[in-house]
Image (spheres, rainbow, N blue to C red):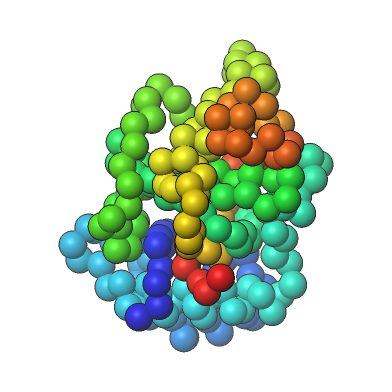
Amino acid sequence: MENYWYISDAKLEILRQTLPRTWSQDLIIKLKFKSPWFEAEVGHRDVKAAVANTKIIYETLLKSGDLLDFSALSEFDSPQFFSFRGHASRMISNEGYWIALHRESSALLLGGSAKHAIGASGTPEGSISPSINPLGAATSLSTQESAESISEKISYVWQEVYRTGGASAPGVVPQVEGVALFAGRFPASKRQLRRAGKLPISNVVVGTPIFVKQVAS
């Protein structure tokens, strides 16, 4: 089986529903999900079916030509979902599953539930305070929290995952690709990124993963 780090079945269904209607109807025939579609309970998940569904939907999505890479997003873009590829760190903290990577001047922080991780054994564990919720902050700009405070939180979590997961250390770092739901794009905190030795980064894209797959470098 191919090396998938993470698959969220419910978010995969959201992704399927964004495809053109004729493609979506055709996919229902091919997919291996049972109806209704829902997040499978831990311990009762058909991982092979989840992987097969992911491959079919991703290949169909690529044909549509509507998939933007996170590093190509501008401050004016707000897509429902985006793609990513790069050398990545991963970390589990407080039942959360975190991934950090970067490309050129953009960093990417993904946060999801550890229950959707596949083969999570060996994934480093870290400690991120539950009070720091970068996904919530990214999607709650109507609150009184300042943009500077949100950027500081997001950059802190990114550098923590990046360093804990081993990407900042010498050696071979796994490369991944995948698709995620978009939460926001924010200026990077130089103070936080200095801790990871990544000052050239100017912005951090935040999202929640639909799937993450390890690929050859």
